[in-house]
Length: 72
Length: 390
Image 1: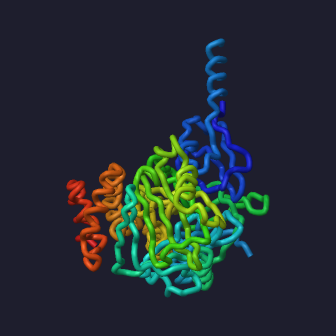
Image 2: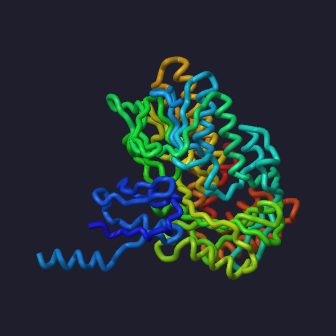
Image 3: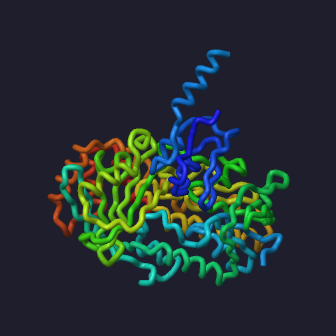
Protein backbone atom coordinates (compact mmCIF):
# COMPACT_ATOMS: atom_id res chain seq x y z
CA UNK A 1 0.00 0.00 0.00
CA UNK A 2 1.41 3.39 -1.00
CA UNK A 3 1.59 5.70 2.02
CA UNK A 4 3.54 8.54 0.44
CA UNK A 5 1.39 11.25 -1.10
CA UNK A 6 2.27 14.04 -3.49
CA UNK A 7 0.39 17.27 -2.89
CA UNK A 8 -0.99 18.19 -6.32
CA UNK A 9 0.41 21.21 -8.19
CA UNK A 10 2.99 21.99 -5.51
CA UNK A 11 6.06 20.25 -6.92
CA UNK A 12 8.96 22.26 -8.39
CA UNK A 13 10.43 19.12 -10.06
CA UNK A 14 13.87 19.64 -8.45
CA UNK A 15 14.74 15.94 -8.11
CA UNK A 16 15.85 15.77 -4.43
CA UNK A 17 13.34 12.96 -3.81
CA UNK A 18 14.53 10.95 -6.80
CA UNK A 19 18.15 11.28 -5.67
CA UNK A 20 17.49 9.90 -2.18
CA UNK A 21 15.00 7.20 -3.20
CA UNK A 22 16.70 3.85 -2.48
CA UNK A 23 14.11 1.97 -4.56
CA UNK A 24 14.20 3.87 -7.88
CA UNK A 25 10.47 4.40 -7.29
CA UNK A 26 10.01 7.99 -8.47
CA UNK A 27 9.51 9.09 -12.07
CA UNK A 28 10.29 12.75 -12.67
CA UNK A 29 9.76 14.42 -16.01
CA UNK A 30 10.00 18.10 -16.94
CA UNK A 31 6.79 18.94 -15.08
CA UNK A 32 5.38 15.62 -13.97
CA UNK A 33 6.09 13.48 -10.93
CA UNK A 34 4.78 10.12 -9.85
CA UNK A 35 5.60 7.39 -7.37
CA UNK A 36 5.64 3.84 -8.70
CA UNK A 37 3.59 1.94 -6.12
CA UNK A 38 5.09 -1.46 -6.93
CA UNK A 39 8.61 -0.20 -6.17
CA UNK A 40 7.98 2.15 -3.22
CA UNK A 41 8.69 0.78 0.27
CA UNK A 42 7.26 3.81 2.11
CA UNK A 43 10.64 4.64 3.70
CA UNK A 44 9.78 8.38 3.67
CA UNK A 45 13.30 9.58 2.81
CA UNK A 46 11.75 11.57 -0.05
CA UNK A 47 9.43 13.29 2.44
CA UNK A 48 12.35 14.37 4.64
CA UNK A 49 14.42 15.60 1.71
CA UNK A 50 11.79 17.67 -0.07
CA UNK A 51 12.80 21.33 0.36
CA UNK A 52 9.25 22.62 -0.06
CA UNK A 53 7.04 20.00 1.62
CA UNK A 54 5.47 18.56 -1.49
CA UNK A 55 5.52 14.97 -0.27
CA UNK A 56 3.86 13.71 2.87
CA UNK A 57 3.54 10.45 4.74
CA UNK A 58 -0.12 9.55 5.27
CA UNK A 59 -0.19 8.45 8.93
CA UNK A 60 -3.93 7.78 8.97
CA UNK A 61 -3.65 5.45 6.02
CA UNK A 62 -0.69 3.70 7.68
CA UNK A 63 -2.75 3.20 10.83
CA UNK A 64 -5.74 1.96 8.83
CA UNK A 65 -3.48 -0.52 7.09
CA UNK A 66 -2.26 -1.86 10.44
CA UNK A 67 -5.84 -2.20 11.73
CA UNK A 68 -6.85 -4.15 8.64
CA UNK A 69 -3.87 -6.47 9.12
CA UNK A 70 -4.90 -7.06 12.75
CA UNK A 71 -8.47 -8.00 11.72
CA UNK A 72 -7.10 -10.48 9.23
CA UNK B 1 17.87 14.66 -38.16
CA UNK B 2 18.03 12.05 -35.44
CA UNK B 3 20.16 9.06 -36.38
CA UNK B 4 19.61 5.52 -35.12
CA UNK B 5 23.05 5.37 -33.57
CA UNK B 6 25.77 7.68 -32.29
CA UNK B 7 29.25 7.19 -30.95
CA UNK B 8 28.23 8.90 -27.70
CA UNK B 9 24.89 9.69 -26.05
CA UNK B 10 24.91 12.17 -23.18
CA UNK B 11 21.93 12.05 -20.84
CA UNK B 12 21.44 15.59 -19.51
CA UNK B 13 22.39 18.99 -20.93
CA UNK B 14 23.83 20.76 -17.89
CA UNK B 15 27.43 22.03 -17.60
CA UNK B 16 28.89 18.55 -16.96
CA UNK B 17 27.03 16.87 -19.83
CA UNK B 18 27.72 19.68 -22.30
CA UNK B 19 31.40 19.68 -21.39
CA UNK B 20 31.62 15.90 -21.80
CA UNK B 21 29.92 16.31 -25.19
CA UNK B 22 32.35 19.03 -26.23
CA UNK B 23 35.50 17.04 -25.46
CA UNK B 24 34.08 13.74 -26.72
CA UNK B 25 33.17 15.30 -30.09
CA UNK B 26 36.34 17.36 -30.59
CA UNK B 27 37.97 14.70 -32.79
CA UNK B 28 34.94 14.00 -34.91
CA UNK B 29 32.92 11.51 -32.85
CA UNK B 30 29.14 11.82 -33.29
CA UNK B 31 27.52 12.97 -30.05
CA UNK B 32 23.85 13.36 -29.10
CA UNK B 33 22.77 15.16 -25.91
CA UNK B 34 19.29 14.25 -24.62
CA UNK B 35 17.84 16.90 -22.29
CA UNK B 36 14.55 16.32 -20.50
CA UNK B 37 13.64 20.00 -20.13
CA UNK B 38 12.57 22.19 -23.02
CA UNK B 39 15.62 24.39 -22.97
CA UNK B 40 19.28 24.44 -22.05
CA UNK B 41 20.16 26.51 -18.99
CA UNK B 42 16.67 26.64 -17.56
CA UNK B 43 15.36 26.27 -14.90
CA UNK B 44 18.41 27.44 -12.92
CA UNK B 45 18.71 25.37 -9.74
CA UNK B 46 21.98 26.88 -8.58
CA UNK B 47 23.58 29.58 -6.42
CA UNK B 48 25.73 30.40 -9.50
CA UNK B 49 29.03 31.27 -7.76
CA UNK B 50 32.33 30.07 -9.28
CA UNK B 51 36.00 31.06 -9.34
CA UNK B 52 37.46 32.93 -12.33
CA UNK B 53 40.23 30.35 -12.63
CA UNK B 54 37.60 27.61 -12.75
CA UNK B 55 35.82 29.21 -15.70
CA UNK B 56 39.08 30.01 -17.52
CA UNK B 57 39.93 26.33 -17.87
CA UNK B 58 36.98 26.08 -20.27
CA UNK B 59 36.20 29.46 -21.79
CA UNK B 60 37.14 33.13 -21.50
CA UNK B 61 35.01 34.90 -18.86
CA UNK B 62 32.61 37.19 -20.68
CA UNK B 63 30.49 39.96 -19.14
CA UNK B 64 27.40 38.63 -20.87
CA UNK B 65 27.28 35.66 -18.51
CA UNK B 66 28.68 37.39 -15.43
CA UNK B 67 26.18 38.88 -12.97
CA UNK B 68 28.71 40.03 -10.36
CA UNK B 69 32.45 40.09 -9.62
CA UNK B 70 33.35 38.88 -6.14
CA UNK B 71 36.34 40.23 -4.23
CA UNK B 72 35.43 39.23 -0.67
CA UNK B 73 33.42 36.88 1.51
CA UNK B 74 31.31 37.99 4.44
CA UNK B 75 31.04 35.17 6.97
CA UNK B 76 28.27 35.66 9.54
CA UNK B 77 28.14 33.91 12.90
CA UNK B 78 24.93 33.09 14.78
CA UNK B 79 25.41 35.98 17.25
CA UNK B 80 25.47 38.50 14.39
CA UNK B 81 29.22 39.10 14.23
CA UNK B 82 30.51 39.47 10.71
CA UNK B 83 33.94 38.45 9.45
CA UNK B 84 35.19 40.00 6.21
CA UNK B 85 37.52 37.78 4.21
CA UNK B 86 39.21 39.44 1.20
CA UNK B 87 39.71 36.92 -1.62
CA UNK B 88 43.13 36.29 -3.09
CA UNK B 89 41.53 35.22 -6.34
CA UNK B 90 38.43 36.79 -7.91
CA UNK B 91 35.11 34.97 -7.89
CA UNK B 92 32.12 35.34 -10.18
CA UNK B 93 28.39 34.98 -9.88
CA UNK B 94 27.17 33.64 -13.20
CA UNK B 95 24.03 34.06 -15.25
CA UNK B 96 23.62 30.32 -15.68
CA UNK B 97 20.96 30.69 -18.39
CA UNK B 98 23.50 32.43 -20.60
CA UNK B 99 26.53 30.50 -19.38
CA UNK B 100 24.98 27.10 -20.10
CA UNK B 101 23.97 28.30 -23.56
CA UNK B 102 27.57 29.28 -24.26
CA UNK B 103 28.63 25.75 -23.29
CA UNK B 104 25.96 24.39 -25.64
CA UNK B 105 27.28 26.57 -28.49
CA UNK B 106 30.83 25.37 -27.91
CA UNK B 107 29.69 21.72 -27.92
CA UNK B 108 27.51 22.42 -30.97
CA UNK B 109 30.46 23.92 -32.82
CA UNK B 110 32.34 20.66 -32.21
CA UNK B 111 29.46 18.81 -33.88
CA UNK B 112 27.30 17.82 -30.89
CA UNK B 113 23.55 17.50 -31.53
CA UNK B 114 21.13 18.41 -28.73
CA UNK B 115 17.57 17.14 -28.44
CA UNK B 116 15.44 18.83 -25.77
CA UNK B 117 12.23 17.47 -24.22
CA UNK B 118 13.77 14.01 -24.49
CA UNK B 119 13.10 11.99 -21.34
CA UNK B 120 15.47 9.03 -21.01
CA UNK B 121 13.70 6.15 -19.27
CA UNK B 122 16.02 3.18 -19.68
CA UNK B 123 19.28 1.76 -20.99
CA UNK B 124 19.95 -0.77 -23.74
CA UNK B 125 22.35 -3.60 -22.98
CA UNK B 126 24.27 -6.23 -24.88
CA UNK B 127 26.12 -8.78 -22.72
CA UNK B 128 26.06 -6.48 -19.66
CA UNK B 129 27.53 -3.66 -21.70
CA UNK B 130 25.53 -0.45 -22.08
CA UNK B 131 24.76 0.04 -25.79
CA UNK B 132 22.27 2.90 -25.86
CA UNK B 133 19.17 4.41 -24.26
CA UNK B 134 15.41 4.37 -24.56
CA UNK B 135 13.66 7.72 -24.31
CA UNK B 136 10.33 9.43 -24.69
CA UNK B 137 10.08 12.36 -27.07
CA UNK B 138 6.89 14.09 -28.20
CA UNK B 139 4.86 11.29 -26.67
CA UNK B 140 6.64 8.54 -28.59
CA UNK B 141 9.01 5.94 -27.12
CA UNK B 142 12.23 5.75 -29.09
CA UNK B 143 15.59 4.11 -28.79
CA UNK B 144 19.03 5.03 -29.95
CA UNK B 145 22.25 3.04 -29.90
CA UNK B 146 25.70 4.22 -28.91
CA UNK B 147 29.18 3.01 -28.12
CA UNK B 148 29.29 5.03 -24.90
CA UNK B 149 26.54 6.56 -22.73
CA UNK B 150 27.39 9.51 -20.48
CA UNK B 151 25.08 9.83 -17.45
CA UNK B 152 24.92 13.57 -16.74
CA UNK B 153 21.39 13.46 -15.39
CA UNK B 154 22.04 15.46 -12.27
CA UNK B 155 20.96 15.11 -8.69
CA UNK B 156 18.01 12.93 -9.76
CA UNK B 157 20.29 10.58 -11.71
CA UNK B 158 18.99 7.10 -12.41
CA UNK B 159 21.29 6.13 -15.28
CA UNK B 160 23.98 4.78 -12.93
CA UNK B 161 21.65 2.50 -11.01
CA UNK B 162 20.09 1.20 -14.22
CA UNK B 163 23.59 0.05 -15.14
CA UNK B 164 24.00 -1.66 -11.79
CA UNK B 165 26.21 0.97 -10.14
CA UNK B 166 25.50 1.72 -6.51
CA UNK B 167 24.36 5.31 -6.93
CA UNK B 168 21.76 6.74 -4.69
CA UNK B 169 22.26 9.59 -2.26
CA UNK B 170 22.05 9.01 1.49
CA UNK B 171 19.34 11.42 2.60
CA UNK B 172 21.68 12.83 5.27
CA UNK B 173 24.12 13.87 2.52
CA UNK B 174 21.42 15.46 0.36
CA UNK B 175 21.37 19.19 0.95
CA UNK B 176 17.77 20.23 0.35
CA UNK B 177 17.90 23.76 -0.98
CA UNK B 178 15.55 26.65 -1.63
CA UNK B 179 16.59 29.88 -3.26
CA UNK B 180 14.87 33.14 -4.07
CA UNK B 181 16.20 35.75 -6.44
CA UNK B 182 15.32 39.12 -4.97
CA UNK B 183 15.57 42.77 -5.90
CA UNK B 184 15.46 45.94 -3.82
CA UNK B 185 18.34 44.68 -1.73
CA UNK B 186 21.13 46.85 -0.37
CA UNK B 187 24.16 44.62 -0.10
CA UNK B 188 27.74 44.90 -1.32
CA UNK B 189 27.54 43.65 -4.92
CA UNK B 190 31.17 42.46 -4.72
CA UNK B 191 30.69 40.21 -1.70
CA UNK B 192 29.34 36.71 -1.22
CA UNK B 193 27.63 36.38 2.17
CA UNK B 194 27.50 33.18 4.19
CA UNK B 195 25.44 32.62 7.34
CA UNK B 196 26.33 29.74 9.62
CA UNK B 197 24.49 28.36 12.62
CA UNK B 198 21.44 26.47 13.77
CA UNK B 199 18.95 29.30 13.24
CA UNK B 200 19.99 29.90 9.63
CA UNK B 201 20.69 26.49 8.15
CA UNK B 202 21.76 23.65 10.47
CA UNK B 203 24.05 21.10 8.78
CA UNK B 204 24.42 23.48 5.87
CA UNK B 205 24.65 27.21 5.27
CA UNK B 206 22.68 30.15 4.00
CA UNK B 207 24.07 32.21 1.15
CA UNK B 208 23.50 35.61 -0.42
CA UNK B 209 25.21 35.89 -3.80
CA UNK B 210 24.85 39.25 -5.64
CA UNK B 211 23.30 39.25 -9.11
CA UNK B 212 23.84 42.90 -10.08
CA UNK B 213 21.56 45.94 -10.03
CA UNK B 214 20.59 45.54 -6.35
CA UNK B 215 19.51 41.94 -6.81
CA UNK B 216 20.82 38.68 -5.33
CA UNK B 217 20.29 34.97 -4.93
CA UNK B 218 19.34 34.21 -1.32
CA UNK B 219 19.24 30.52 -0.60
CA UNK B 220 20.09 27.83 1.86
CA UNK B 221 20.68 24.12 2.13
CA UNK B 222 19.99 21.78 5.01
CA UNK B 223 20.59 18.07 5.41
CA UNK B 224 17.66 15.68 5.02
CA UNK B 225 18.20 14.87 8.68
CA UNK B 226 17.17 18.45 9.53
CA UNK B 227 14.43 18.58 6.89
CA UNK B 228 12.72 15.79 8.76
CA UNK B 229 11.77 18.34 11.42
CA UNK B 230 11.65 21.67 9.55
CA UNK B 231 11.80 22.22 5.80
CA UNK B 232 14.38 24.28 3.93
CA UNK B 233 11.53 26.48 2.75
CA UNK B 234 10.51 27.36 6.34
CA UNK B 235 14.12 28.22 7.25
CA UNK B 236 14.34 30.58 4.27
CA UNK B 237 11.01 32.24 5.02
CA UNK B 238 12.12 32.83 8.62
CA UNK B 239 15.38 34.42 7.45
CA UNK B 240 13.75 36.72 4.92
CA UNK B 241 11.11 37.80 7.41
CA UNK B 242 13.73 38.66 10.01
CA UNK B 243 16.55 40.14 7.92
CA UNK B 244 15.15 41.29 4.57
CA UNK B 245 11.41 41.89 4.93
CA UNK B 246 11.54 44.52 2.17
CA UNK B 247 13.33 42.40 -0.41
CA UNK B 248 11.24 41.96 -3.56
CA UNK B 249 11.07 38.28 -4.41
CA UNK B 250 11.30 37.78 -8.17
CA UNK B 251 11.57 34.02 -8.39
CA UNK B 252 11.86 31.02 -6.12
CA UNK B 253 13.27 27.60 -6.84
CA UNK B 254 13.92 24.33 -5.05
CA UNK B 255 16.94 22.10 -5.60
CA UNK B 256 19.13 19.39 -4.18
CA UNK B 257 22.89 19.17 -3.82
CA UNK B 258 24.47 15.80 -3.06
CA UNK B 259 27.25 16.76 -0.60
CA UNK B 260 29.25 13.57 -0.34
CA UNK B 261 32.34 11.95 -1.77
CA UNK B 262 32.27 10.79 -5.38
CA UNK B 263 30.69 7.37 -5.93
CA UNK B 264 33.16 4.50 -5.72
CA UNK B 265 32.45 3.47 -9.32
CA UNK B 266 31.60 6.09 -11.94
CA UNK B 267 32.26 3.99 -15.01
CA UNK B 268 31.07 0.63 -16.31
CA UNK B 269 31.31 -1.09 -19.69
CA UNK B 270 29.80 1.43 -22.12
CA UNK B 271 28.97 4.01 -19.46
CA UNK B 272 30.46 6.92 -17.51
CA UNK B 273 28.84 9.28 -15.01
CA UNK B 274 29.68 12.99 -14.72
CA UNK B 275 28.65 15.95 -12.55
CA UNK B 276 26.04 15.64 -9.80
CA UNK B 277 25.12 12.21 -11.21
CA UNK B 278 28.61 11.01 -10.21
CA UNK B 279 28.65 13.00 -6.93
CA UNK B 280 31.38 15.31 -8.22
CA UNK B 281 30.14 18.25 -6.14
CA UNK B 282 32.64 19.73 -3.68
CA UNK B 283 31.07 18.32 -0.51
CA UNK B 284 32.26 21.21 1.66
CA UNK B 285 31.08 24.16 -0.43
CA UNK B 286 28.30 22.42 -2.33
CA UNK B 287 29.73 23.96 -5.51
CA UNK B 288 29.33 21.69 -8.48
CA UNK B 289 29.54 23.72 -11.70
CA UNK B 290 33.28 23.71 -12.27
CA UNK B 291 33.94 20.34 -10.62
CA UNK B 292 31.20 18.80 -12.79
CA UNK B 293 32.75 20.41 -15.88
CA UNK B 294 36.15 19.02 -14.89
CA UNK B 295 34.54 15.58 -14.62
CA UNK B 296 32.96 16.13 -18.03
CA UNK B 297 36.27 17.16 -19.56
CA UNK B 298 38.13 14.15 -18.18
CA UNK B 299 35.35 11.80 -19.32
CA UNK B 300 35.05 13.46 -22.75
CA UNK B 301 38.79 13.25 -23.39
CA UNK B 302 38.95 9.61 -22.34
CA UNK B 303 35.95 8.76 -24.54
CA UNK B 304 37.57 10.55 -27.47
CA UNK B 305 40.77 8.52 -26.95
CA UNK B 306 38.80 5.28 -26.56
CA UNK B 307 36.95 5.87 -29.84
CA UNK B 308 40.09 6.94 -31.67
CA UNK B 309 41.98 3.82 -30.59
CA UNK B 310 38.92 1.60 -30.95
CA UNK B 311 39.43 0.45 -27.36
CA UNK B 312 36.17 1.10 -25.50
CA UNK B 313 37.44 -0.47 -22.27
CA UNK B 314 39.67 2.60 -21.97
CA UNK B 315 36.68 4.46 -20.46
CA UNK B 316 37.15 2.37 -17.31
CA UNK B 317 40.30 4.41 -16.61
CA UNK B 318 38.04 7.41 -15.93
CA UNK B 319 37.54 6.57 -12.22
CA UNK B 320 41.24 6.84 -11.49
CA UNK B 321 41.73 9.95 -13.63
CA UNK B 322 38.93 11.70 -11.73
CA UNK B 323 40.24 10.59 -8.34
CA UNK B 324 43.71 11.89 -9.17
CA UNK B 325 42.41 15.28 -10.28
CA UNK B 326 39.71 16.00 -7.66
CA UNK B 327 38.16 12.87 -6.16
CA UNK B 328 40.78 12.40 -3.47
CA UNK B 329 40.60 16.06 -2.44
CA UNK B 330 36.84 15.76 -2.14
CA UNK B 331 37.32 12.96 0.38
CA UNK B 332 39.25 15.39 2.59
CA UNK B 333 36.66 18.15 2.05
CA UNK B 334 33.99 15.67 3.09
CA UNK B 335 35.77 14.97 6.37
CA UNK B 336 36.08 18.71 7.04
CA UNK B 337 32.37 19.10 6.28
CA UNK B 338 31.52 16.41 8.81
CA UNK B 339 33.68 18.21 11.38
CA UNK B 340 31.95 21.53 10.76
CA UNK B 341 28.51 19.86 10.87
CA UNK B 342 29.24 19.09 14.49
CA UNK B 343 30.10 22.69 15.42
CA UNK B 344 27.54 24.28 17.70
CA UNK B 345 26.59 27.96 17.53
CA UNK B 346 29.05 28.94 20.30
CA UNK B 347 31.89 27.48 18.28
CA UNK B 348 30.99 29.56 15.22
CA UNK B 349 30.77 32.65 17.44
CA UNK B 350 34.18 31.91 18.99
CA UNK B 351 35.78 31.43 15.56
CA UNK B 352 34.31 34.72 14.29
CA UNK B 353 35.55 36.56 17.37
CA UNK B 354 39.05 35.11 17.10
CA UNK B 355 39.29 35.74 13.35
CA UNK B 356 38.19 39.34 13.64
CA UNK B 357 41.45 39.96 15.56
CA UNK B 358 43.43 39.00 12.47
CA UNK B 359 44.46 42.07 10.43
CA UNK B 360 42.42 42.56 7.26
CA UNK B 361 45.45 42.20 4.99
CA UNK B 362 46.40 38.93 6.68
CA UNK B 363 43.00 37.32 6.31
CA UNK B 364 43.01 34.33 4.02
CA UNK B 365 40.85 31.25 3.83
CA UNK B 366 43.84 29.33 5.14
CA UNK B 367 44.10 31.64 8.16
CA UNK B 368 40.38 31.26 8.79
CA UNK B 369 40.85 27.52 8.96
CA UNK B 370 43.80 27.99 11.31
CA UNK B 371 41.54 29.88 13.68
CA UNK B 372 38.88 27.21 13.34
CA UNK B 373 41.52 24.68 14.32
CA UNK B 374 41.90 26.12 17.78
CA UNK B 375 38.32 25.05 18.25
CA UNK B 376 38.63 21.65 16.63
CA UNK B 377 42.26 20.49 16.56
CA UNK B 378 41.45 17.10 15.03
CA UNK B 379 40.60 18.87 11.76
CA UNK B 380 44.23 19.96 11.51
CA UNK B 381 45.47 16.88 9.71
CA UNK B 382 42.71 16.96 7.13
CA UNK B 383 43.07 20.67 6.45
CA UNK B 384 46.83 20.39 6.18
CA UNK B 385 46.30 17.79 3.46
CA UNK B 386 44.01 20.14 1.53
CA UNK B 387 46.47 23.01 1.58
CA UNK B 388 49.64 21.10 0.97
CA UNK B 389 48.59 18.46 -1.53
CA UNK B 390 47.31 20.72 -4.30
